[in-house]
Image 1 (tube, rainbow, N blue to C red):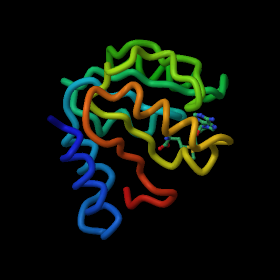
Image 2 (cartoon, rainbow, N blue to C red; image 1 turned 90 degrees about the vertical axis):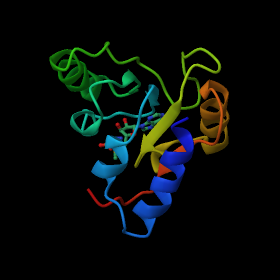
Image 3 (cartoon, rainbow, N blue to C red; image 1 turned 60 degrees about the vertical axis):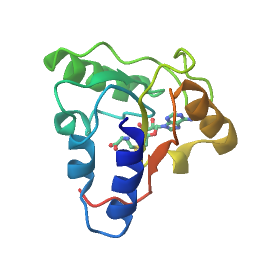
Image 4 (cartoon, rainbow, N blue to C red; image 1 turned 180 degrees about the vertical axis):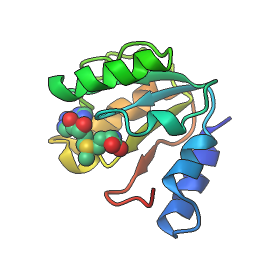
Length: 131
Ligand SMILES: C[S@@+](CC[C@H](N)C(=O)[O-])C[C@H]1O[C@@H](n2cnc3c(N)ncnc32)[C@H](O)[C@@H]1O
């Protein structure tokens, strides 16, 4: 199960013992990413990860879609954290890097993150993360 690794990793990121890149490189399984932006995190995810990216901003999503296509990943979904078009219990990891600070309804966003995870807690990287 990958989620505890992500949570433990997140603690280490906060303490400055682990970089964002190292944390992402440890993820496995189905990763639902909230607010993927232009795809900064894609190069650091293992190729084996089944990535489901979401991004509400159309301009960013266009860039993200190109980055995803380059890596043979599925096209990102147009979605906000508060309403993820993702099946309940389908994610091994719910990933959110520097996103919650932009979400209007954080409670709804976290509720959605908990809904789509298969098991275990949800990991959200803080506003400032070492690369
Ligand atoms: C600072 S960027 C971070 C992008 C990416 N996660 C990264 O690590 O580079 C914040 C992102 O949150 C997205 N965002 C803003 N409001 C959102 C919402 N309600 N739900 C999901 N994403 C949102 C923005 O469109 C943007 O892509």
